[in-house]
Length: 356
Ligand code: MAN
Image (cartoon, rainbow, N blue to C red; front, side):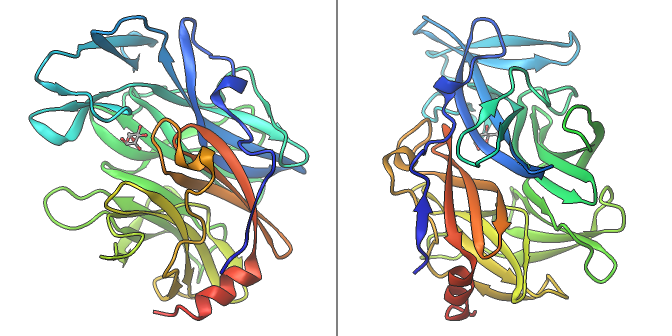
């Protein structure tokens, strides 16, 4: 058993703590943040979701970034229109294509929160990264941050009617950034880039979402330059009957330990419940799986983890390591941010008894 020491201050950042960036909008989510250690300060790059304040009961607003007009706009969907489905609070579904959506009910962008103690955060008044391309018109989501030297590689889901891919930007100062475009084409989510070269190559985990055959599984890719990825290999599949039976995806940036690369990943079951577990990959060959959690190491238990915008979700995009302590940050129920400390030794000892 891994002891999870949830922060007493949880949830650390809630929508009501963050003023909206758009006039006439409300913040409904401050969650799934990427994590960076920047000159001794802890940075959380929050996914902030905003939606129009609306008194209408017959129409559902769907905000988007209008790339042609270079401004944010709102499209309205009539609740009585049989072409659309409104059962999932996150999306406006398409009746003719049950696994597709016509729009999202909120627009996400990325905003920085800063802390010295890791528990109390000050949120910047403006976005750091805002949708800017035609691949980002439905928003940008779930960033991960890999530090290599003094460069921070930030990559996130870019959502648009063209699909969902992974976009990369780089920064050295968290003030300006360079945009390198999509590094994984649609549909792909949950990429994490390893912080060091392995055998002379960069590695990434990612999660293509397959439509005609196959499962939402974790794949491994290689690169010489962090921009062009190839040698794609299937790494890890969903497991029938387990906590990660329906879909899986990488969470935190992989952590180098003496026993192997430790990846904290998320798994969803048939009830749409998201938990976190661990995966251990060979230090010299990350295509080799050494162990995988039979049971989650963190599951939605606290009230703020069970209830929110989309309930029963714990979802990490980053963690920091201090000696033997894993400081894990995670989004709770698509609404707020939480933090917890876990003992790395305990996680690794647990994995040793669960070798696959
Ligand atoms: C899913 C959820 C949402 C997200 C969309 C688009 O429906 O993860 O939170 O906005 O996909 O990525």
